[in-house]
Structure formats: structure tokens, C-alpha cells
Image (cartoon, rainbow over all chains, first blue to last red; front, side):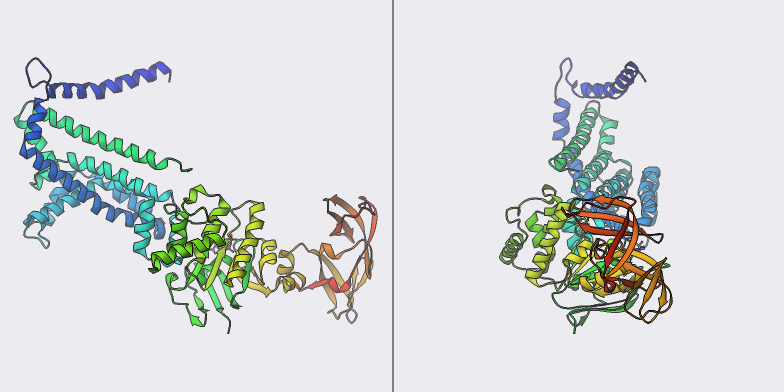
Length: 259
Length: 348
Ligand SMILES: Nc1ncnc2c1ncn2[C@@H]1O[C@H](COP(=O)(O)OP(=O)(O)OP(=O)(O)O)[C@@H](O)[C@H]1O
Ligand SMILES: [Mg+2]
């Protein structure tokens, strides 16, 4: 391909992404007739509903990341150490959430855990929150597992484990003091992706009827003119901040280390 | 009662029988090498001692206590790996103190012990470095300190020097031996380098296809190899196929030449082993003659290849200003002492 063609494609792609973005931002600033202002943002940020849903989603995202990593790190570690032959199967399983629509999963959840089932999670608020968190973990699984698995492959897990065992360390110590610190960058990058996913998720939260940021976005979109665009810009900024933080951590951790 | 005792160990992985009827008794403070070619089961034996593998049959006892069923963590062993295996997220001091910390030792005691160990390995100023900031040799010394810090009963080393370059390998192996002697710790050292095994060990176990072919001092293993494999694997050995023509005096025929070995031998074909350094260009009392095929001047040593009745023999001579190296094609008469000649059991 010639240089010119490459540039043309790049510019075309940039226009495809940037133009709508600019339109969105521009519109979110045009609440006052004839001049740019942050009025839409002011209104949104002052809305108690915004604060509640935003706070709820942040808490859910943190819970998702913590529980998800508690699940993913030991699993990926164990597969690498003891069941390397199962790796393709596990990888396939962690990729399933990408091909199964969220709505299918939620209906499955509701059927399995409704108030008349053996585990009536939807019967209480806490139960529903837990169920939603499980859904979020599933959505983040492909990214969390990939990130951690790649991180683990960079260290000699088997020998480090044996060295630690010969010094008397148990599984808890090995995971917490040796494995986790060595895959921390991977864990963080998985965490940021998960955070971005949870902050924007709509289907699960709406169907489980929880006050999350995604449904709030949708609600505003249906009822207001300028505010939804301010919200979308905020959500977009969060996503980019997450990606930026990921890059930063990766670069920071590489500094000074020959790899 | 020996300090470390391995009795009748057997181990298979699937269909391959990796260790067969392995027996070894190690005295307290002894330095033992497991020597053998790649894949002969050295690491597997070491891993059974460490507790990473469970023997199919047999038992292991340390300090009079049967540890066969005990997990790695409770065996009180220190292990050093070929790939160093330092914890990359911990400093040198934290690495060395790791075992003590896991045991719940008091912080002040840990730091005192870490200082002591770092002094012992000659890296007292590297406490706050991370492993990636050290050279390979330094990393391996830290790994040694880490293994020794909790005062294990037995130290196990699996080819600890093979990842290092030649110069450091020699200096570090001597250092390991000195530290081992100073601490008096019972040690098993796995290597496929015979020079390492011979120079370091109190006793050497020569392994071949999962079996301990011979267990003996370096002197015994080198000078009185028990099997053909040991004879060939340890040191350089010339083998000569000959025919015993007089059983009582042990006279053998090499083509037209005769050699009297002065020991009773069964009549028929026999394999003789001759170390290159046991053959001399002057002196006897016995002699053989051959045609010089090659003559390599290596500086302090001259290595000559001689064709004796169709079989090639290597001779090592120290360089001498009084005698030029033999020329290719000339007839060379060289002497040997019949008692130096090894009679090797037929291959079995
Ligand atoms: N976990 C395992 N599963 C299957 N086979 C194994 C396992 N560990 C070792 N083996 C096999 O057992 C044999 C002996 O292995 P071992 O590692 O003990 O040899 P070694 O003498 O240490 O060799 P090297 O000098 O190459 O390290 C080899 O053929 C190896 O392939
Ligand atoms: Mg080995």
C-alpha cells in the first residue's frame, strides 16, 4: 500500500470517529442560545439522580473487579500450574460472554434465581445486587482472564511456586505475596476495562431494575435534549481515562526492567 | 545411622520408568553429587528428596525421620534451581528473609540473619537491590542465601551453575563448596558436568538410565569405574578390544602385540580401558607401539592419537622443552603400567 493511501484511510477513520464525537461535545455545550456554556453539565452534576446512579455504578464496578479478580487470578494461576492442557477449554469458556448477548444471560439469571427458585436471589435487594455483579463479572471475564493469563505467562510460575514451597510458603502466601504482585499490571489493565464496561452497561441493570448509570443515561436520553449529551461526554471521558491509566501503568511498570 | 537415607526409590511417569531401585545413604555434612547424562533421572531423584514428586515405591528419611509422606513445606530442605527463581517483586533482603518470614520469625531476627547470609555470600551491600539489577552469578548466590537462611537440614541444588558462563561457574562452585563446608550442611548437588562433580564432592553417584551405577569418592569413580558406562562417562577413556590368550597371567593380544596385565582373566574377548594420562612416551614397565595419526599441541598438554592394531588411542603428555611432539606417520613406542589398565565388564 502506498503512503498516500495509508494516510487517506487513517484520515477517513479519524473523521468517522471524531466527527460524531465533536458533534456530541459541541451540542452538549450549546444549551444557552448563541454561546457555549457548561449549563448542561451543571444541571447534570447537580441532579441527585445522577449522583446516586453514578455512585452505585462505581461501587458495583469496584465490587466486580475485586470479586472478579479473586476468581480469575487463582483460576488462571492454577490452570497454568497444574492443568495446562485445559487452557484452550478455559480460554474458550472465558470468551463465551462475547458471543452470548447480555439479554440472554439476564433472562437466564431471572429464570434460575427468581423468587420461587432454589436460590431466590432476585427476592432481595442485596441478592439482586449480587446477581448483577455476577453478570458484570461475566461481561468482564474475557478481558480480565486474558490480561491475567498473559501476565502469568511472563513469569516462571512453576519454578517460583516450587521455590516458595521449599521455603515453607502455603498457597495463600504464594498467591498473595508472589503471584499477585507479579501480575499486578495485568490485573490493573483488566480492572480498567472492566470498570469502563460496568459504567456503561445498560441491559442487565435495566432488566434487574437496579439504579445504575447506564439506565439513567437512557432515561435522560429519552426525556431531555442537551443533558444526555453532557452525560455521554462524561461517560466517554471515563472510558478514555481508564484506557489512559492502563497505558500509564503498563509503561510505568516497564521502566528500568529489562524484559 | 545415616542422616539422609533413600531406600529402594522407584518412579515412573506414564510408561517411562525414570528411577529404578535407587538407594543412597548420605552422612551428615556430606557433599554428594548426582552425575549423569541428560534424562537419566537426576532431577527426579532430587525432586523426590524435596517432596515435589512422590516415589511410587520406596522411602526417604531425613535425620532419622521418615518423610516419604511429608509435603515439601514440612521437609526442612533448601533448594537452589538452575534458573535462580528469585522472587522478582522482592528485594534481595526480602528474598533471603522469605523463608524466615513465612515461619513467623521476629523481624529483628530476620534482618540479623539476612545480614549474616549476605555477608556469607559476599553481597552485603546489595540488600535493597531487586533481582533484575543483579548479574546471573549474583542472583544465584542470593538464591543460595535464600535457601540457607532458614537453616534447612538438607540443601538441594539442581544444576545451579549451568546457566552461568564458564569463568563464574568455576569461582561460584568453589564458593558453594566453601559455604557448604563452613555450615556443615548435608548437600545433594545435581550436575551433568563431571569436572564439577569430581572437584566438589565427597562422593559421587553416577546415574545411568535411572539407576545408580556407582556410588563412590571421586577417586574411586575415576580410577575404579564399576561399569562400562561409568568408565566411559567419567573422564576420557580409551577402550581397546583385545583377546585374553593366557588366563592365569592375564596376557592379552592386541593384533601381534602382547600385554601382560598380571591378574587372572577369563579367556576370550575382553575390553580394556586406558586413561590418556596413564600412557607415557617414556618409561614402562609395559610397552605398546602404534602409528601416530594426529598430534595436537595444546600448550601445556600435547594430545597424540595413535593407531594400535587398528584401534585409536589418545595419549596426553605434558609439554616438554626437551622433546618435540611426535610427528604424524611415525611409529611411536609408549609405556604404561599394567595395573593402570581397567578391565571393563562386558556391556550389559
Ligand atoms: N513430570 C514429568 N512428566 C513426565 N515425564 C517426566 C517428568 N519429569 C521428568 N520426566 C522424564 O523423566 C526422565 C528423567 O528426567 P529428569 O528430569 O530426572 O532427568 P535429568 O537427569 O535431570 O536430566 P537433565 O540433565 O536433562 O536435567 C526424562 O526422560 C523426562 O522426560
Ligand atoms: Mg535435570
